[in-house]
Image (cartoon, rainbow, N blue to C red; front, side):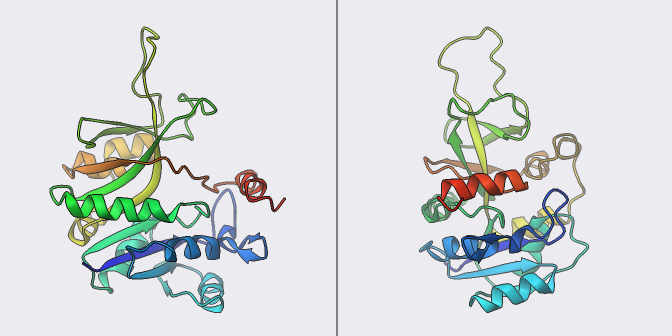
Length: 242
């Protein structure tokens, strides 16, 4: 089975312009993500999907593969779909371009479990929420699942809501790594924005609202997404580069 990894990378981030090219230990941020992805044994090809020639040239300079995508794309999923449409494959993995600490094993685990469960159209990851994170924090996306790992819902709210403050309630943080069967990915990007997606600002809710079954794989390898310059400093400290 041919597996394509796509790393969407947009230059004009609202909270951190030029983020993919930010210097992290002498290398652009996007290079860290690409190198992590290349360590995954399950990926046959890794392509950076960008809307900016500066990112394209930076990727080529460090020996990676990149493709220009439409500047009008509203999301990284749309960029991944455009690349996947021109690269024949059996499975597409969407790797967030701002996740320099994503564990390569997460990619391999997600690919393996989705290949073994073809009744699901797409898959993603979660980690148990540790005590350092507040389940009520809106920037931490939570997921609840039925037995067997099928997603019931994703939310920025604290789900499940622990009304009676009982002990032992578990919260799971969603990690933004996705694998799709190509036909499902192309279907998703041609669907209109759904009401729940619009309310929560979470793309994966479009899939749930339209009947796409999402398999959620639990992992122990958390990651730090870089949304802001402050997040970037956290990553530098974690890597002992600060």
